[in-house]
Length: 268
Image 1 (cartoon, one colour):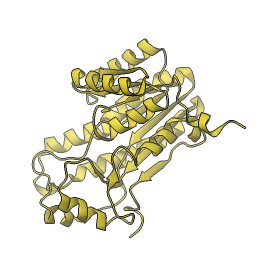
Image 2 (cartoon, one colour; image 1 turned 135 degrees about the horizontal axis):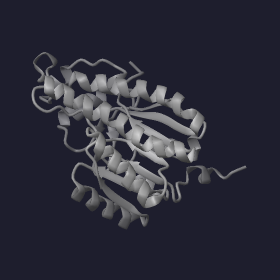
Image 3 (cartoon, rainbow, N blue to C red; image 1 turned 45 degrees about the vertical axis):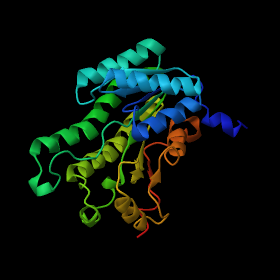
C-alpha cells in the first residue's frame, strides 16, 4: 500500500496559482510550495508577482516564479500558459484563484453601474474559463492534471444585506454570486469533458475569511452566523483543502465542490 504521505506529495509538480501574490491565493501557493511543487504565481503587475515568488521560494526552498496575467484578456492567458509550459515542460496543477468579490463603486444592485457588473463577471467567470482552456490544452497533451477553481458560498446561499448595513461595510455585489454560480456549473461540465484525458476539475468554495481588512463589528457579526463560531483563519483553514485537491490524495475526485465555510451555508 502506498504511504499516505506520498499521496500528498507534490514533489516536482508544476502548479499555477492565479492571483497567488495575495490573500487566499498566497496561502495556497505557500501550501503547494511546502509540499514540493514548482509554483508560478500570477498578478496583473509582474513586479508584485516576482517579489512574492522570491519570498515564497526563499522560505520553502522550491522554485517559484512570477508571471504577469490579466485573465480578462485571452491573449494574456495564452502567454501565461505558454510561458510556464515552455519553462518547465509541463503543467500539473492550475488553481484559478484570481478574481474577488469586493465591489468597487456603488454595490446596491438597483444602483450598480452596468460596466462594473460586466467587469466582475469577466474577472470571476470569464477569466477562469480562459485559463482553463489555455492551460487545459497542455494537460490534455500530457494526459494528466488537476484544475481547481475558487468558488464561493455566494453561489450557494442568498444573504440578507443587514450584516453589511449594520456594520457599515460595503455589501457584496449580486453579480459576484452570478459569476461564482457560473464557476460551479462550468467546473462540473468541464470535469466531464476532461475526464477521458485524465484531467480532474474541482471547486473550493470558501466562506468569509478574515484577512485583516474587516472591522471587528463585522467579524463578530459574521461569527455569530457561523456554526463553528468564527470566520475562516488565514494561513490555516484553506490549506488542507487546496493540498487535497491538488495532490494524488484526491485522484478519484472530480466534478466536486468542497465547501470551506465553518458550516455557514448548510447549518441554519
